[in-house]
View 1 (cartoon, rainbow, N blue to C red):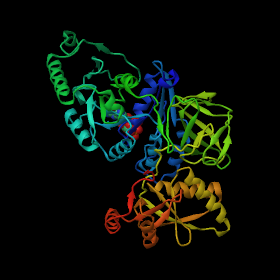
View 2: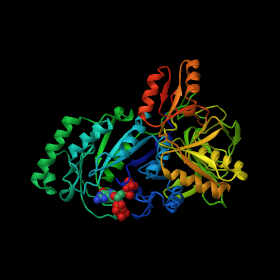
View 3: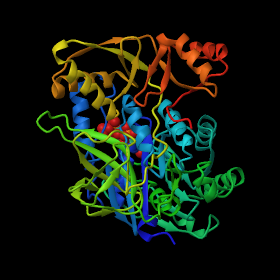
View 4: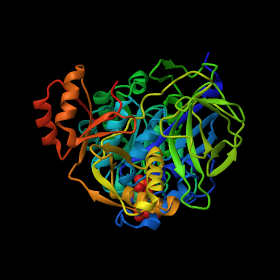
Length: 526
Ligand code: G4P
């Protein structure tokens, strides 16, 4: 039997295209879960969208992001761990890594905008790991796209089967409430944004006369017809398809108005998976194994040069994590113990004595960790599923202060270990090329090199916009390829060869010219 401590854990992330309502929904979960008392307690964790070069904004975001990195609370007999992800698209890589540490996600879609660019990207990352996804269609208080049209759009663009578990009654100014198909109850709209209202009306089914006490006859008829159609088109909820990431339950609501939140939260706690086994390169690691294991998926550095501490976020995969016990750092082949591991309950940090699979603990770090590092009780394990993705901007580092070369190299090494950006070393001359998703990362690196390492550099923009990790079954052919394309090849931090290209066309041409070479879009391809 699985340990109840593990069974009760629900570790997930709420993700969305910026502005769809991720922050608002997170806050409402904390409110409904009793973790906070008033709306507005969760600060916005997003950089100003319109002004990407506002460095103060990055600092502000980083300042609050430790507190909100993990928001844990107990609700309804469960331990809920919400892992926060940055809203800004330049931090997409951080989001992808955080998704490696969750057991499921809730994807928020704005009913006015439908599926947006980031929605598609996030979904493709979930698909890579078969992460179970629940979809929340938000802002139903606004005149948006029709529910059936939205479902079609989501199914087509996100390429996933859907199963609505709640259904809206009206929309925009006619929005009356949500009928829970899963629980068979009706929740009527009450636009009080600050209080948790409980206006649930239990009905036996949609033929229940009691509905007429709350809705007009036409509305009841409309709801009956639509739910019948939903039933015919989408069928019944299949738990195992959801667990495999093949079917996404859909909920409707309005996060800002507290609406549809209880339906999704209660159903989520029932159907969302508890921590499951994890794949390591060596073997499958089961949650109920006695021995502890976990991996680092995020490193947060303090930007204040007087306090150069870092916090490594460790997701526990098996066993029990204990304070002050020695654990084995697989990559460094050494033992470490942690006197002050942090637990995150709502917005509070506290020292934790023990933690279970599904939990995330924060470990003070003086430079021991890099993203993907594994801790165990002695076994050599490397957890899978924390790949690097192709960056879109590549710049060569030019040292501006030759007297500080060592500091520059150390700074670049450590910042890329933290996952701020990716490092590729190109020959001849060991040239260092930084690859990142957005311009913000280069600003962060420049600022931090100067303030934390006393080093100065300039970035020279390169024409590349894609990277492909290259392998081949034929070593001779690979060596030949690497030699012929040397000016486009960089070595990543694991010394894997990476082909850098200007665009997809260049990649397609190269693929055609070198049919024996395999081109991978992420660093993990085994
Ligand atoms: P994000 O984290 O996904 O970026 O989105 P966030 O929750 O910050 O919400 C983006 C905007 O959408 C906010 O407005 C928020 O108030 C609004 N919003 C969230 N849920 C709903 C909803 O159900 N209905 C409507 N009509 N709006 C919603 P803002 O103007 O950017 O910020 P604020 O001034 O309201 O704080």
